[in-house]
Image 1 (spheres, one colour):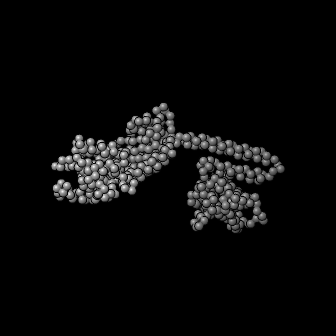
Image 2: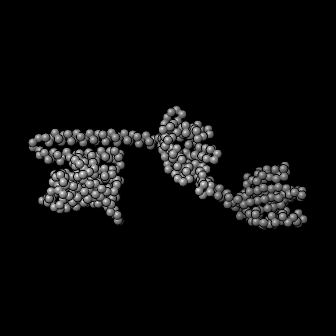
Image 3: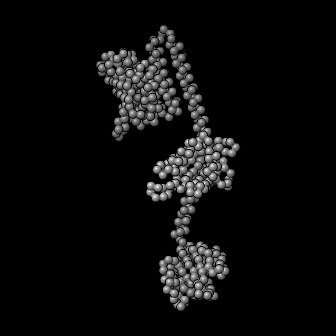
Length: 457
């Protein structure tokens, strides 16, 4: 064997750490030499392997014997085998996965060189990748989502079967950009294309989800939710999108439920508005008699109008909240003929919860009613400053101030009227705040304080 290994290049390769190497004698079916790397892979000593006929069969689990035979047949037919994967048994009973290839040694008849690589790390990484892929597929399946992958270089599109099903495309049929565009509702393409351009723009790289309609071959329209993200390549400053991947989900049932809910809410709002009008008409007719003072009828009617105004604003916003500015204008307009000149309104945009919006509307109505009868809005020169700010701190607070100027002299009342009691009650119960009133001779000043967490939508 020493004569056979005199070649300096081969000996350097044989004793390197590049991989396991063994030399076999085809006539005796023995391994006649083996390097240290392969001994370490096998977990055996040289005496346990060298010059023992068919020793590799003893170290190979039975399920891999056929692969060994196929590799040997390839060597006999063409002088080398294709690489294949198998496992070896170690003395402790554990298995080591390996990749094997072999070839006859030129110039040495009957001799075979075998290359063996330990692929334990590779197989573990493959198993981890498969596990991640399996979990991803389970998650996608549970979410009932389809997946797509668009190669922007080759223009090839790969759609999962669920993605094709969502688009109404035949299973097993290749997907093209033209087919996707044809399946997208024509009114929605003008919306989806700009989003695609933003996603593929390296300066923007938009990853927003978006909803649109697809049209099935039978003409049925269905709503879908898509999420896409581009993959970029190239040097900094010259990157280009090379792939666009994402998911798609059928949300038709959700959109149908939303439409039904919108119809029901619109119908409910219409009925509530009609009911308020009926109540107002009944109250007006009931209070027309001489036994009911006129100011009582006007007060009740005004409060119903304030409630109706807040309701109308919230209806426009689907009862998700209302801006404080809109609530203030809606509550004060009926009581101030020239609102911009008589009342200055200023403050940051604050979106209020529905109940807080209704309560504040009622409170502002009472303040404006009082100002119209006795305060700054009862003469031609009076003026009201309505403003609000958010005080930051451990507990952010809304501070709303109603300040009357240039009206008739003001004196503190002997007791609290209904309006004052109502203002304090609704602010405390519905807004979690408090009210402070100062009856200065120059004009009434009212400050409403409420935690932002209880009023902000």
